[in-house]
Image (cartoon, rainbow, N blue to C red; front, side, top):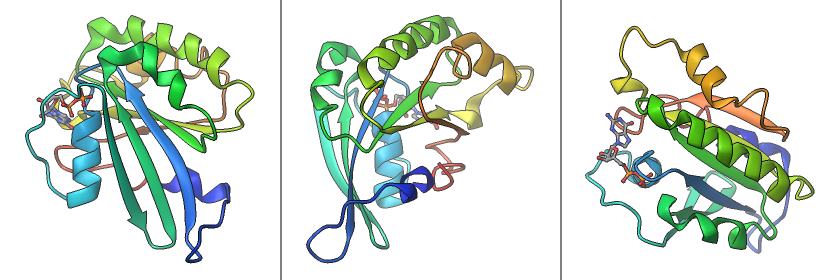
Length: 168
Ligand code: GDP
């Protein structure tokens, strides 16, 4: 994941290890993204109950990824210690919950303000977005550029067809 290349912590075998926590409302596609990046396939997933932990390697970069269930919101911040990056996944097809996403961004400001970690916001399910929906409206409705006061990168993607994931 591109945004991680800037922070360093060397592992034993010359690999650069990063701790990444992936959060987002339930059903956003976190597990699907993790599966897609890990296996290059889109596979059926059940809602995450609690936590999935995966290690993914990109060349010299080793990512330890914590995928935390959307319904386990109270657990999220317990995993923010020694964080290199946070990935926040948004379901781009679920406009009705973009205000909830905005509320989560406000909480993240407080929780991550002094952690010196980068935030990658993935607008997932772009393959299923209605043609009339404008991407810039989604960004505005959840307030990603105005509410989130952290070092943030925004990327649209699809776990289904893989678009945008490696760029992110
Ligand atoms: P999580 O609760 O955030 O881990 O979400 P899941 O990965 O379990 O996905 C929730 C639902 O959205 C599942 O039915 C997935 O098949 C579906 N889904 C996830 N990503 C995509 C995507 O990029 N496109 C489409 N069309 N469906 C997706």
